[in-house]
Length: 506
Image 1 (cartoon, rainbow, N blue to C red):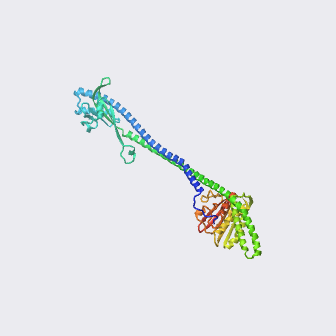
Image 2 (tube, rainbow, N blue to C red):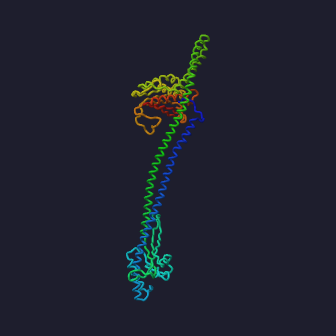
Image 3 (cartoon, one colour):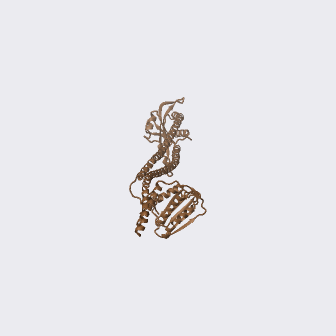
């Protein structure tokens, strides 16, 4: 059920225009692809910066904790230095004449003074090093007493009257994972143990070095938790931003793609229209030049036919052949002219069913000859529509004739008229096939051989046909006529199952 000549596989200007348009469409999408790239890149940069910021915050918090704990240790050590000198050194020297911590009474007295001074405070241990030799003379941890060379660089600095601290910690944000060891943190402060004057001022003479160890695991754990919460909240915010950005970018990408495809479609239609306009001008010129000689040839052949009947009866069919062929050529020329110079429809309010019945009556003899059954289901309640009776009759006739030609012998050709559905489902929606509430729908079905999807895409193109004879303009003219009536036409076909044309008239 096709009208036109088969396409020839060769390059054309239109194909070049299509390729160029596709390249332009891809070029139009590139800027948005760059936007997408930079959007996701900036998101990654923000996430990295957030992680870096959380690390800086946690380090600053740890530094502040160390400074505050160190100040606390210095105050504690100063207080401890005063109490040890006044409550232990002076009474011991008066009572025993010298200090010897190996004596149990002296050790117990010092131990009692130290524990009373540090009771309730955040101290894990207090250790006193001898100033003359690197040995632990006293410690709240009995196992450390007497250990030699236990003091390191910090001990040496304190002997030179330089108080200093050392922080020992283990663990990181990964220790927040259940099942991993807990974090630990110790602050060791080394302070010189000096003599104290009666006024309370410390003298330069150093009697030893005091090491105060504080357990800061709880505070350090709080900092680690702060860092973990910062990373978690930042990651959650970044995830939300990522999803929002991805949604916006994906939606924008789809909109850009739809617009680019629409632009490509419009450019293709424009290129085709320009090509057809040039072709139409050429066809109109050639057809006009051919029409006059054809009329002369036909008139001459008709005169010859009449004279041959008189002079040589029985041979007049030769002249009849000339008349028939010139009539066929004249029909082709008229098709060319109709395509090149389409007429403006003269619309009048009328009944569609009347035009359909007239077209069916015209093809009835041919259908009978081919043993094709004509079926008509016409809705008598259809509203009147604006039609150019002759133009629309010709459009219907082109489709009906094509239906008959698609069936060699026998078959069914069915015509149905009805109101189009008011709502459009997703399956039925088609930009090329709009539906109007209350519009008139004409369906023409044949049980012919049908056509492939590839042919289906080209049937409305001018000069496309799979027949040996014909101009390939019938369906192109038909679509132009229907579109001039502000309607639309759609075709569905499957090889071996026939073809269905659907016309919608508003």
